[in-house]
Image: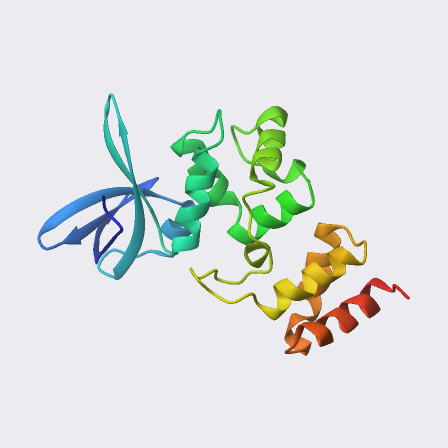
Length: 195
């Protein structure tokens, strides 16, 4: 219903910001990371998700669209509601979440208050097939985009028998050193010391 809100920050709370748009203040629950950098009076854009429940309608907002998409993936997991998903995104970046999922490292999620071992394992299991490699590489994913050289390089390393987390980490480490998938594969293989 609401894609985003752009306006001045009218107030900040412990877990929310009030964004004024055309004279109306919208209370939007958001991440601690956003709140730490926000200042009253500054302009902001928050990409929003509207949650409708018996006890009311609640807006959740994020400074980047990919954070909103990650939030929506998290609340799609059984046992994770909006508040817990917001806590995960307050502690971990999208890149850290994707890397942990590809590495099957549930312990990363256990650091978040309210996330026990079972929920952490469920996050890894349920997001495994829904996660885009470019998110783990720290790249913005655009709809209808061409496959990036980094993604091609990761796919090539996977076909050579590398583990997904290992391939992503190697390509990420050398991504600034090459422009083509072929160059990235060569550099990543050297980094992995595979002959």
